[in-house]
Length: 294
Image 1 (tube, rainbow, N blue to C red):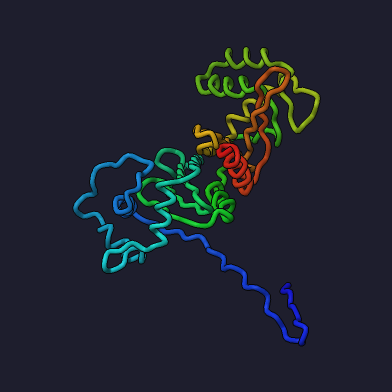
Image 2: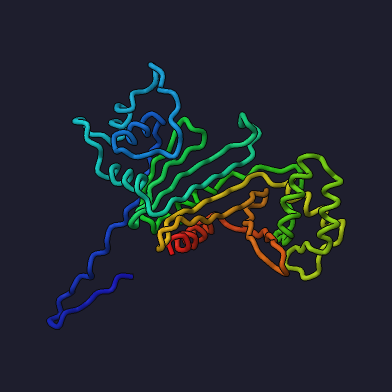
C-alpha cells in the first residue's frame, strides 16, 4: 500500500522515492579470467596458483570483454573494481564448504567451496564446484541470507538406510568415536563407547534415554544415512584487535539438513542434531559476524 499525503490546498504530495534495490550480480568465469582480474586489481586469491594456462586456453581478456567487465580500451568496470576491493580488504571472511554424495561424480561426491567477504555493507564472493569455472558475485549484505541459502540448497541423494530420529542428543565423544569405529570396522570399540555412555542418548526431546539396542541403531543411522556435510567458518578482527573465529556445522540426510549444535551439560560436552532449513545459515552467519567483530 502506498501512503498519499494531501497538502493544505488540496494538492497531492508524492511520497519520498524509495531507493532502488541493488540486485545481486553473478558471473560464471574461467579460472584464468578470475586470476587475470586478481592480477589487475592487486587482490590476493584464496588458493594457490597452478601452472599457467595452455596455449589453446581461452583468452581471459576476451572473455572479460564478452561479459562487459572490461571495456574496449582496457578499463575494468567500476562495479567489478568495487567487488574486488571487498574481496581483497574484507572486515569479515566467510568460507562455506559443502560436500554431497553423488554416485555419478568421479570421486563419489561433489564439493562446493564459496569464499564470501563482507565490507561496509557489501558482500563479494568467489564460488566453485569443481575448480574449472568460478562464480564471481556481489550484492548488498541485506541479501546475504538468500545468497548463503543458495550454497546449501542441494538435490538430496538417497541413502542405503533410514535416517536417524529428527532430533538426537548425545555425548560428543560417542558421536565422533562411533564414526571412527565404524569406518575402521571396530565393533569392539563401538560397543565399548556405547557402554561408557549408556543412558546418555535422547531422541525427539524425550527425557527418557534410549536403551542399548535403540542407542546402537540411532548411532549407526547417524553415520550410515549421512549423505553430505556443510561447514562454514566465520573470521574477523574484534574490537581489541584479536582475530576471532566461529563456525557452523551441518549434516545432510535424505530428509534434509541437521544442525550440529554443541552443548555442555552435567560436566559433559554434548551435541544436539536438529532439523534446519537452508535459510537458517544466514541467521547463524549473522550471529557469528557480530561475535567475531565484538
